[in-house]
Image 1: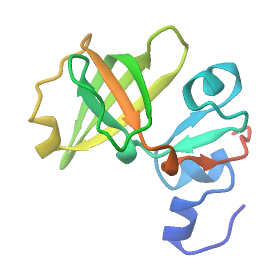
Image 2: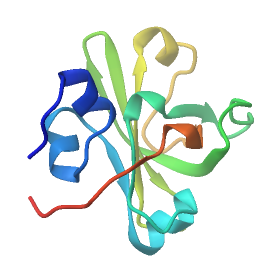
Image 3: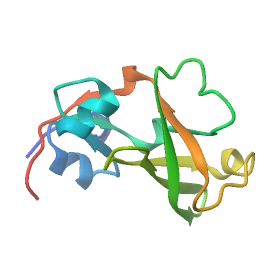
Image 4: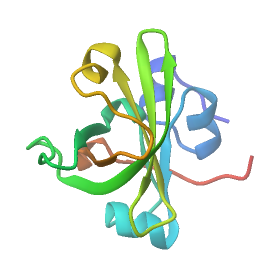
Length: 131
């Protein structure tokens, strides 16, 4: 479906199938996607670019996309922790992957209200495919 080096395919997948095949991803499309990214195109953001901050703090300054969300699940995965969230007032789910050093800065639990954020420079336009 796509030819390139592993890094090229991971960093610039052409379809949602390829993106899912080579790693996890957040794909935003349709009305909820537009409310999240302000783009009419389907957009992919890799979880390692998503920051999680307590809702009482502002998002990192370089992150121009930010939304209030609720933590729905936390998965310890060796050197990283995956934090799954649901963005307030949408049907959109956002996953963040943080190093365990980042995760221990704040002791998050399921149900916490947080800010999910990322720089729009990490948006990758993508074709959504049926899997």
